[in-house]
Length: 98
Image 1 (tube, rainbow, N blue to C red):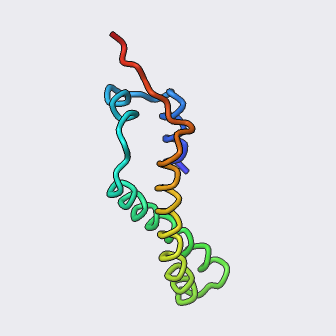
Image 2 (tube, helix red, strand yellow):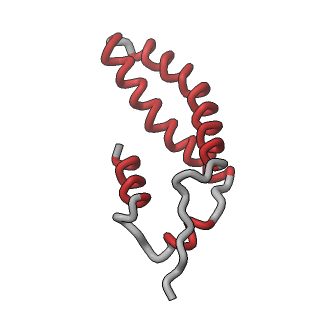
Image 3 (cartoon, rainbow, N blue to C red):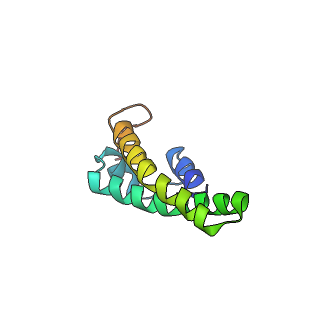
């Protein structure tokens, strides 16, 4: 949630830095998408485990649930990320100030 809020602030222009003008014009690499996928899966799978444990009171069942969903959701997230990178909507070119 914090990451999403931070990305929203950055995208809305509330937070900016000297690199922002260069960064906006660069294409996102597949490696970056893959690393984002992996780090997100750690967070999301921990959440899934905790929810599964809360509802079942069984660490074994919670691990099973988290183990199954980690593979499918990693693939889905990566494809979702790459798909959004092909869409120009919401990407703005910034003209450097002279």
